[in-house]
Length: 262
Image (cartoon, rainbow, N blue to C red; front, side, top):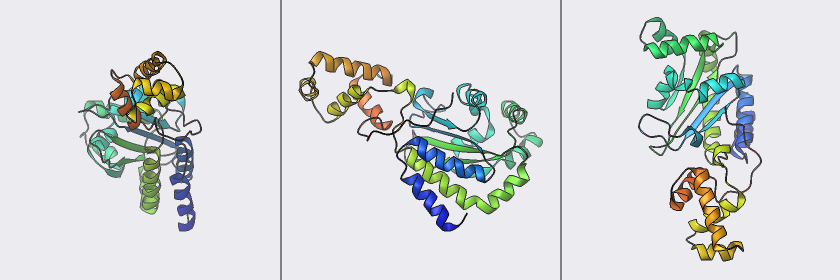
């Protein structure tokens, strides 16, 4: 890809108005490099050794539905050596080290089994990008799964030639995605629930919000209660904070977003 073409692609991703648009642009280019299957995950609620509630995390994939369900919802990702590498590192690596560690017997029993299961599902070689985050609770990572027929040596050659291109696109995609609303079905807010939270975030009382929304105080309380339930929190203050972290309030309306895995 020429420099000017890459710059146009990066601008397109940076100006995307939905997660779906940013994801489609980036993964479309990764496919041209030999990685038509891409997994991406991001959470703002990492705690100790967990990613927090999976419903609060964003998982995107171009893999088939069966693999996506097993990989994300089944928790398979957490048993893979590349995920464990990404947990403790920022940067990028090919998966050749996994092959070498497997053959040398340096992986745990669980990790070695995950390698065998991946190979059985046609997942052999690839690249992992672990993004640096400003928050101790946030973590994002992406896996590029090599197309069938591409082995570790082929991925090494692709990486040697296209490393800067892959990293530039991956980082711009990630930075754009984390700015956009995460509208997971499990955390969906109605427009009125969102509006009520926004007024509370502005410091308005229930009576103020009722006047501003043209409804009764009881209806405001109902909107706020349903918002708390949707966001799985106990207090309205927590709902405001979580809604802000997930970019669900004070955002421009966007088009429907990329289908979360599972």
